[in-house]
Amino acid sequence: MEILQFTIHYFLHLCFPAIVAYRLFNEQWVKVYLIFLCTMLVDLDHLLAVHVFQACRCSIGFHPLHSYIACAVYALALLHPRLRVIAAGLLMHMATDAIDCLFSRYNC
Image 1: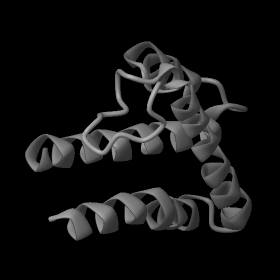
Image 2: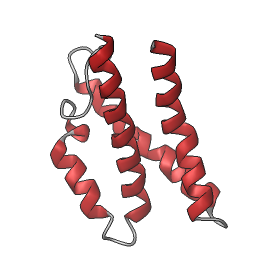
Image 3: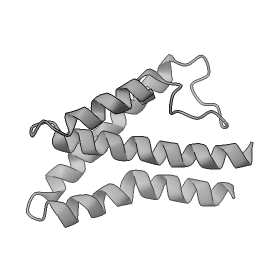
Image 4: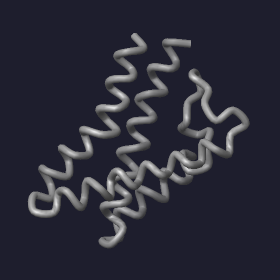
């Protein structure tokens, strides 16, 4: 089960954004994909935790940049044309981490 979780998690973090970028931003897909990858810097908030990594911990609702309020801000940022791609990347990241939380619930 852990290898399945690992595979799905990193597919959703790395491959799915590339597919979205390619399908929605044909001519600028590489630039958009790189922006999507940069949104992974949101994981720097894990460094604020007492234990940087804890296998059974759900990131959503625990880390500041993974909080429900932060997710709401990311969703609102979709409305601003200049922030739309960044917001989409952040929301894909949050969705991936939320799916990971489902796995953690059953593995721990």
